Length: 81
Image 1 (tube, rainbow, N blue to C red):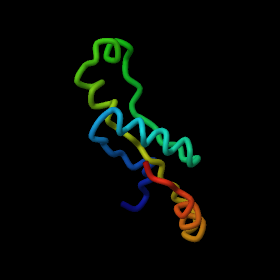
Image 2 (cartoon, helix red, strand yellow; image 1 turned 135 degrees about the vertical axis):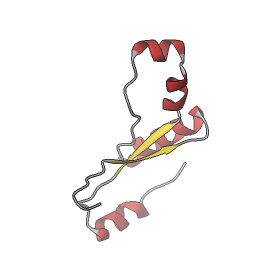
Image 3 (cartoon, one colour; image 1 turned 180 degrees about the horizontal axis):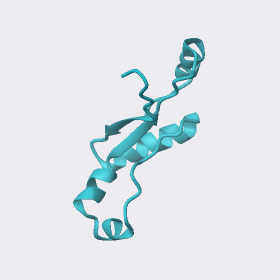
């Protein structure tokens, strides 16, 4: 909607191993792929349901100020996992 400024496109990977591949792909291609949110230590330690969902979530940044030409140029350099 007008006035909205999304920061990321969130997606779920099919497994923790797959989400790891996307994080590595982002690192190799200079794209800030990230997880969200930061969970409390207890959730991570006890591997709660929230943790199990978190380890599947992969967020891709959305660059709204990127001109189409530069976006196409950057996309042509990507290698997908």
